[in-house]
Image (cartoon, rainbow, N blue to C red):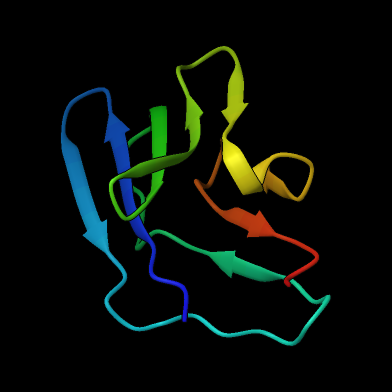
Length: 87
């Protein structure tokens, strides 16, 4: 079971969204973590797995942490995080 919490920071407001349901996918497949409707331009993004950073974008560079390196991609326009090669 994988639990993810997600946080998106916007220029005029901050929205925190938590995924309470476990996400599941087939071995070797991918999952997409999607924020709810985004109406403001995104200026920074922080995705967490529990209390630990998963991916962070400060408006210029994307930093991937721990097991999210080399198997994740972040769309900074939509905030969607794709995690590949599930194990």
